[in-house]
Amino acid sequence: MKTISAVAAIVLLFVVTVAAQTAVSIQQSQRQNAIALKRYEWKSLVQILKDGEIKSEQLAIVSFDRDGNLQTNVVTKTPEPKLPEHGLRGLIAKNKKKEAETDATATTIRLAPLQNVDPGKLLGAAVMEAAKGGHVGSIAITSELLAAINQK
Image 1 (cartoon, rainbow, N blue to C red):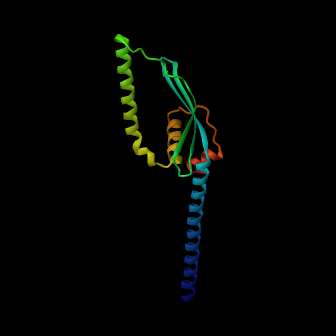
Image 2 (image 1 turned 180 degrees about the vertical axis):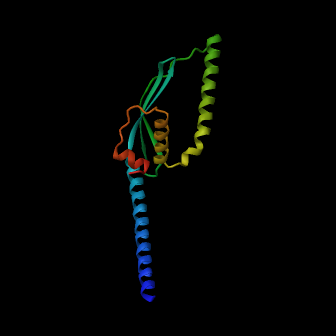
Image 3 (image 1 turned 90 degrees about the vertical axis):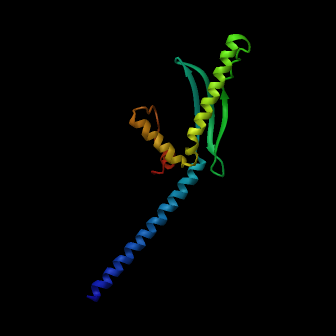
């Protein structure tokens, strides 16, 4: 009976040791993935379309700074068209501009809760959601992307 208890204790000790080593290994992998994500850099292309025609386009390089904050460096941007200033067209242009600014503010407010979400998880969720709807165009599954999604 004592032999069985001793064997059970040894097996239990072995299982606890393996579980602790696995937990440490997972934490170490998470730290390495976070470091790799901070070195990750990508291009962001924003196009504003109206009736299928590109009205505005902005190309930026996006990366993380040392503190983990998102940094966007605009490379090229379509110049803003000069709006009419007087008359009915000027009034319409002023109202449209105010409406666009209000929409931008509302979007900023709606996206505020996502600021503290891990970028890799957000990217992974976006890719998975796009894949569900069949909206994934050409996407390369690279080790950097997998590291960003934390599924490497």
